[in-house]
Image 1 (tube, rainbow, N blue to C red):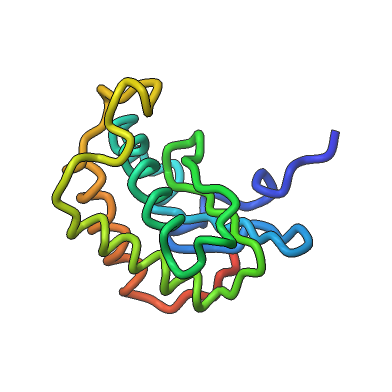
Image 2: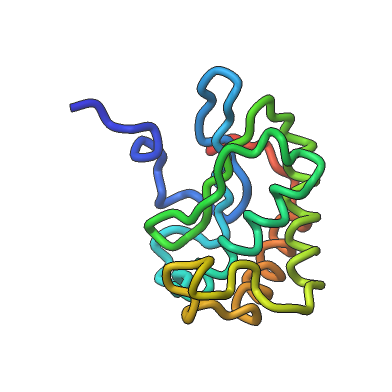
Length: 150
């Protein structure tokens, strides 16, 4: 059976950052790698879940809102996938940084924090998400991004 693209990336040399995982026609899949793979520093469920709620809401209200296809966590607990139609890497990076800043600055209830809006709303923790955003924003602001895995 043919391997999927993400299993052909050498995760032993992959660092935190933002990468283009694949391009399918006009849809680009971004790998928002918040942690180094296999470093045993994985996101806990509360952090992933809350960041998913917050990031998805902010990005779907950003200047690229009409082009957002999907945002969600990686099963390996080291980042997220962001799928964008008609993507421009520079603009996507700018929006990702702004969304992280928006989450850090946010002072309210987690978006979707109710039994009617979420299937497991009790696991949401804004402080955890804010800490993850602070760490990832520092990574994104500290280096140049080629958007390529190698």
